[in-house]
Image 1 (cartoon, rainbow, N blue to C red):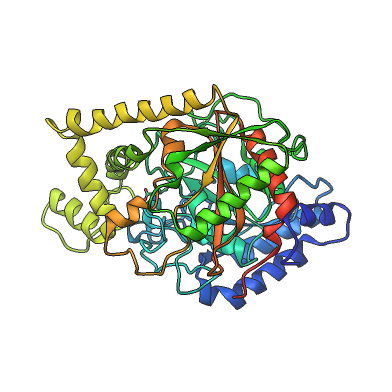
Image 2: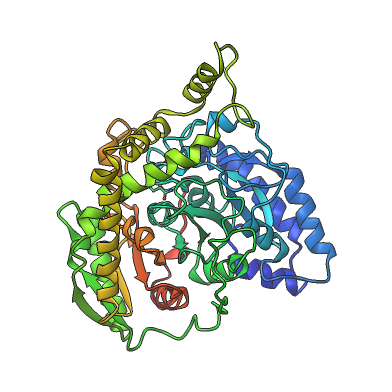
Length: 480
Ligand code: GLN
């Protein structure tokens, strides 16, 4: 049962051939067997999962995710379930409410298994910044799964969950999806409600689906999307039926290939896999168009100013007063703040708060924050220019495959540079998906990234599906 896709599980449950409870037990057993090695989960909610599965079995109404085992990134609030953002400062926090996207998945019949590991507050690209230890890549346990949604992508790759929630601020769904050989989509800004998602950088954060196949991602996205009165940044834009156009193919689709996406740092194995994927799309009837996104290289600099600035503001709420960790002994209010935050936050989070606070301070605001916003506009303009000649943009999701745990941990700049191909989409607010595109000669997964204009998720999924149908990379799973 662990090899079934989400759609296969759903169809089996609907047809009365599968019981949600049995599917749930198979996945809980898989987690028990494998997770001591992978460490994808921070908390497994066995009782909650069983109760949800039993409810699905008892209900006559079998929704689009009926009985599908789902892992939840630990920065999404779930009522009564520990939600820590992989931070010591939120240790023991049990939210009194559910995130809207999660509530919608549950209403569709999904069975929540537990919460997955991430870089603390989603700040990182490897899950090594988790206060509870890193997750491991199921394809090679010495390597990182990517991040920050690395627990979610590792869980799906290792067949511990059929679907997982991720959040993407600068690549945190797409990059770990690529490094773990699964599908991950960052939707358009405003597509999915963020009510109940712990905020990192509010002008960038989006929740999105992680799945083994494009079809599963499409169904999951449809279930979670749509306007929410509890999140004023969610857009009142109709949610299409993402499954409907899925098999329509790529004949006539104009696919832009930006030269900037194949820079000097691109791993040769990644390059070869992506070249082959582009040829495949061409064979299927797409037209490849050479394009330029000239400001791509400035994305990292802009992102690593804007995201920390917003984080420094969002994370001000962890003051040891209302919730979260409070230092045991202190000398007055300011000392209480200082000690609680110093003890509660890890090194990378502290670095970002300091960077952001500095960049927003008087005299530096113009030089850093405002400048970064101007660059953000130029990046958006690059994409708008591209849409005049192409329908989608294709390239690698990550310039390198999964790296060794510890390899970049002491060098934040080296870690930031890994995000060069993923930060521009959230800066522009556009959707992007990473689809499995084979392996390097060393056997590590490669992800093909497809980007599109606002609200073009259906087109991206259709293109991803056309490629997937020919290649079926997703059928190959890791030997853990
Ligand atoms: N790796 C990027 C960062 O460290 C992106 C993280 C994310 O998308 N949440 O900020």
